[in-house]
Amino acid sequence: MTQEQAVLERTPDAAVRRSLSDRPVLMRYLVHTGRFFRTKPLGGAGVVIIIACVIAGVFGNQLERYDPETIFKTTNPEFDEALYEKSLTDPLVRLTARPEQLQKGETPILFSGPTGEHWLGTDGLGRDLYSRVIHGAYTALYVGLGAALMATISGIVIGLASAYFAGATDFILQRIMDTLQAFPPLVLLLLFGQVVSSPTMTVNTISLGILGVASSTRIVRSAVLATREEVYVLAARTVGGSDLRIMFRHIFPNITAPIIVTFTSSIGVYILVEATLAFLGLGDPTQVSWGKMIEEGRRNGVADPWMALAVGGALTVTVLGFNLAGDALRDVLDPRLRGRGGRAGF
Picture 1 (tube, rainbow, N blue to C red):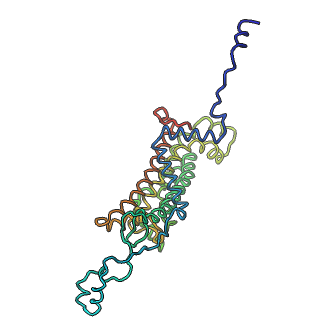
Picture 2 (tube, rainbow, N blue to C red):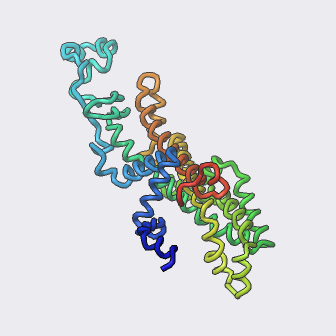
Picture 3 (cartoon, rainbow, N blue to C red):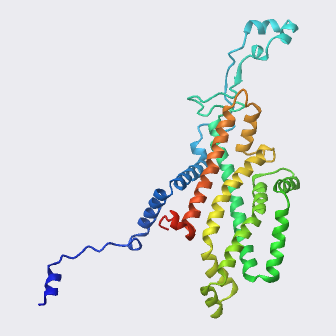
């Protein structure tokens, strides 16, 4: 036996460390998620906000303490029974007394501050503000996600076709996008609102989705232009791959990073625009909307600022969450930023 063989026999077997790719799928996702939250705490906070907003929108009926349309009333504390009896026979009393003194019975609890019964207070009609904020999350998510999906999917199809085929196809499609971007967004939204008899959530979602097609198309087109001349694309053409197969099998998987970032960031923008439309009176009158509640709170802001502050805070935190998550995903998915702390294990 040689000296080297003797040394190897006396050396205990070293434990081989398993790589992350050898672990179960669930374990890999947990490790990636933990690394993302550790390296991108602001992005992790944005993800938590998004999850909370989704839970509020999907399970709002279970989270609401009361029906959002229920009007809460209380006995009128300023009612003066003696003055009321006197006003029945004396018209002068009815003219000089305050209405609250002559209102018999119960009155709505208007613009109350936070209490144990109403966590965020009540609005101008006496409805529970907490329940309406939770219910408004559904409207925000419906419009935000719907418009972002519509704009992103349309942008993928148009951007892929425009950049891949180039030539006349690219020229015609890009001029259409230029025309769409030339109109002021608010003017187009007003035009869409006038076409239908009454604006609904679906109409507003389609309108916002159409407005976002141009920007999504430009982002996809620029990514495809940088990818279509790669070696693997040229190899696919050489072996006779069809145009559809090359676009969706070879090019599309390699441009998903900017698409995911654009989709995530645009949701917050659409939620904010939907609230703006509702604030201006162009939202769905049958749905609870944060913008509509902010406008109602603004009209009584000097005397009762709590409503505008509470609803405005919910809108601000939601939009901030989507923006933070979008920025973090951009840092993680963009290879150029990984060397500056953008790596999160994905």
